[in-house]
Figure 1 (cartoon, rainbow, N blue to C red):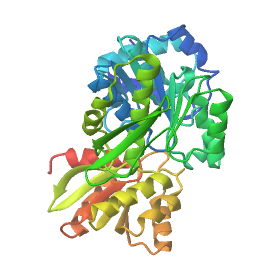
Figure 2: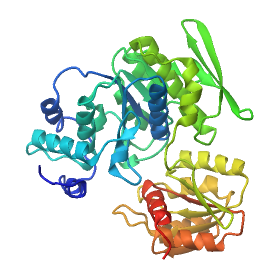
Figure 3: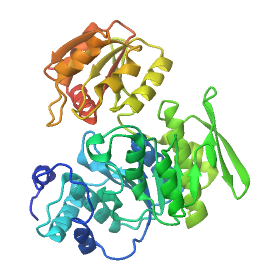
Length: 428
């Protein structure tokens, strides 16, 4: 084996390719054909979109688990440990399992350079092939058409909410971005779309003769009423209805993700004979857990600490609504990557954040904190910083925020991960 522990494997993969992102399938297809050439022994649910992918993966995973369906799940990026990316029946796999898959991918690639994400995707698929799984749920990394996840054919494709993000790679408007994400569709295979899908997504589905399940038309949900919400689906001309307790993940936007996941479960039963029954939906959605989605960590002197990986305008709008309903004044720690539209993220949150604490994000694509501060101040937001680290900013926010305030950390997976790691360390 090339390395005998996980850390050097990951460090080596970071420099294996001279680009961190190199979209395209032709270069990597021979590697996959060496790893596996033939039909897959499980059904594939591929999930693309700008926001809600990780939550939808987690909901589908839970719906399978409570029904006794053996399920693998692949998502990215991870927050704290690489193992979070590859799960079997809800549990992250071990370092040893991952390293064995890494070695198999390394052998198969020969001289082909793979990006970090491509290596991870092939490793995950290799792990799944070693287990007796019924369903594998895959989160697309970026776009869809040219993403490494698209090396396998989806039996069910899901397109979540689409917004402007990763424009450098995917295009400058929703229609172009939507077309890239629609690339995960396969001819005559069902497609689930929620939110307001771009026109080109619908056109592509119809061109491929895909059975199309549209939020609000073929399935849907009602807004929360107290602790309950209502989900429905039109099946063979008859509407099926369920009233359920709200899902475990907070926010009205999570109802759209949960509703799409319930539609996927219904289609797995309908098209593939999976024994996923409606009376399990409620339990599955309530027990779903996903780090970094309006996650409450702990309280400090009566203050609530919340972390959220929201990192684009659409996600920021959803976060603002949840914060309004939380009904507490907010002090925020905010750091983002340089390719993000900072103005679009900040604007919807200005009315609900009293003080912005802006740290430097130590990542090769971290945004200059001085630029973030300037944008916030131009919009009359109160700012502090720049701070050397996320945890310096968090410490300041906890000191400055009055009792009963909420302290929010958001803007990137990397921002949230640094905060969680810092909070888990014992005080000196």
